[in-house]
Amino acid sequence: MILFGMMALTFVNGRIPFTGEPYPLEYPASFGNRTNIPADNPLTKEGVYLGRRLFYEKMLSAGNKISCGACHMQQLAFTDGKAFSTGIDGVPTDRNAMSLANLLWVKNFFWDGRASSLEQQALTPLAAPHEMGQLPEISAEKLQRSKVYPGLFHAAFGTQIISGEAIVKALAQFERTLISANSPYDRYLNGQYQPGSAALRGMQLFMTAPAPERQVRGANCGHCHGGPKLYLEVFHNNGLDSIPRDAGREKQTGVAADKGRFRVPTLRNIALTAPYMHDGRFRTLEEVLDHYSDHIRNSASLSPVLRNTSNEAGGASLRLSKQEKKDIIAFLQLLTDSSFITNPAFSNPFN
Image (tube, rainbow, N blue to C red; front, side):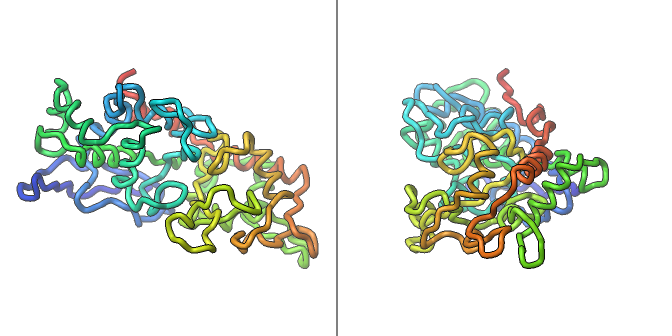
């Protein structure tokens, strides 16, 4: 494991250096050190604690109705179990709530990648009328009138004057600490756990691309969900529709080849984060495997890695057997990190 710390120097009003106690980040060396922490928002223990409180603070929403934790529940790996979340007015959001695991390494946020930092990402759910429905500046005024928050902001940022910018910075600090790296799969990689035979077969299928001409069977998952963090920083059209209902990445780039492409999410804790896909259309992992095995829809922007990839010579789909699907799901079960979903450092401090 790597223990990662830094000098936590914050500039108050752009002038006065304020030093907080650095927050130590612990994660496997295999995750790499290409973390995304802005120079003006280093992690401190004071900032992370404040961010944790704000993550569960209902005063950040109109009418004090909900918090960030309403759509990102720790026991569900910071998802909410719904196809589409509902905010202060009960109107469903446009897309499924993503898990918040291992955001420290992510470069592009939201399904369409429209935010380049956690600070920028936080602004959308806070202000969106069908989510929390309140501008951060309004939240700052409410928090300023409380007895506890001016002191907490002073401890975190060196000033008791609360701002919308400081709110999103604190939230981002907390979310960067949500590291999931202690699943049975991680212990297997460290030589501390031996999976069953079904999970081992599933792991091999997961990591292998099919090559029927060489009698090699595979599920081809590693192309998008490879590496120790089980995701790649890419966008794919994974064949959900021949005519995508949601333009996805194309809305941001204007490039036709990006139609129906969405950010590849991590598969860590995947057994806890149903329903699946950007629109939550699949209720179970079995449905997901059936889609990739037999129901890829062709379109002009379908990702090449899914085009005519098959375990049968000349086949147009993967054609996984029933046993292969069961084995892959057995492997996916190894990705559940029970310590992540029970870690008191991530829990609701108001409970």
